[in-house]
Length: 309
Length: 315
Image 1 (cartoon, chains in turn orange, blue):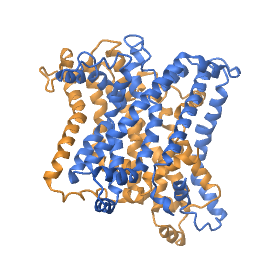
Image 2: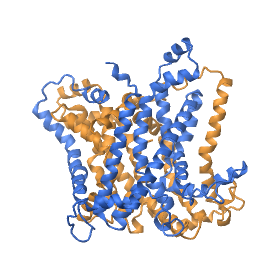
Image 3: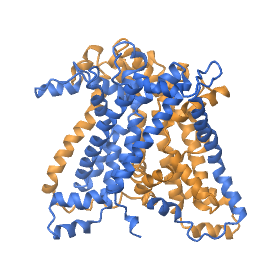
Image 4: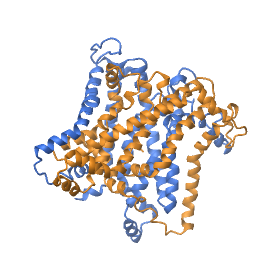
């Protein structure tokens, strides 16, 4: 059990740090550019078709969220009748602004804590040689294999014991102790830093914490950014934990709030699909904005670490 | 196994005796994780195992019921339903997703600089929150008026009721998930770009055609990435929750969709644990899932070992 996760994560990440550091595009980009355009055209046509398949649902969603209730299923890309009031309705029925704010706060808390804590632990595993290191790191990797369902109930009981169920704390507080995947990712990065850097600082009297804080962390900024963005996304998408821990709608995060809108206006409810469309669009936009700004970090991160994907 | 030793063993080569100060400092850094591991992983694992032998219901204190929960598992028709749903879905989704992603990545690898644009397009759906994607596909897959069936209608196919017909709910979910295949495309494309060009040239000189080059060069060289995604995608497919729950459970579960076709294992576990507060039983369910995942992963590792090529293994 301890070895298999290492095997599976080590492979795509074996050259990870090098690529993480690289400022430019991934190595090999465009190396087939010398192929004449007519040779590439058939591929481009197939890809263009695939592009339609992948983007059409988005366009459909945007369009549906501007349609009146009766037109949602007319499948016209340009609404026959525009109804921007859907968004006002969503705002009215659900506390969208509150949920967006809650998700942002939980996401930032989750991402900040997990980035700092995982970096600390990763540095411990990367820089020091100490007895028990390999066993413990194997354990870190092994925890990645554990289905969250196994610990879900006892962790709920812990939060219930300290009286924090019904608050947003359980959605992020575990991150204070680091997270296995990010520890692995950051350790790989720290290992790629030249050791002489740290030796020299040691000679100059730098403390161990100084090595981490003043040398390793500043250099690790690209890797830290990846961890931060991944966790923001993971937190923004999480449905299960808010379902378990939150009852008060004022504390709902965006996915939990969206789910309640789907429950109210969907099949079991009033069939206001235009409202569901508008709410889904609102829930998605922040992630698209993040992607627009951090695309390279995200793509590089996926390519080199093979996060779930 | 070789990969493990190369990753972990890299720095310990010298193995100078670590001095005590350094050890203490090291544990200062990793202590954070160790506390978290004890409190949020090891402790809960033990607690969950213990709970699985009790009738704990979150209200009264737990009583030991021996193996009753596990015996109940065996006879609970919902368990076998949930388990078979989950396995069928995984078998349906994972290979198709891998094939689709590989095809797209192969295409991207052919178009030079334009690949950046398409890669972005394919990745965008991955950024869509699962709940939003679930809602969206509930509409697109609507049997009467949905986009998919309307499109199929144009070519003379009468599409099934993806969201209500028990036989088509799982394929419908697989389609929903396929929309998010872009993450795998990125992984495969990165792997394809690592394949040394000389190998293709050498293969061509030896008279290998396109198919042969794909079989004998490309596939072995990216087998690591394929293996990795197989394991990770299978594990996550077996824990399917977000989309299925969004589309078929919650407020709507007692109305239109009373069927069990979308009852996935983790959904049933969640219902048992947090709706019915059968926490002892849910703990037993969780351990069964863990065992199932371990067995499937072990089989995949064992079978794949023959096919996976690691560059590091030469030394």
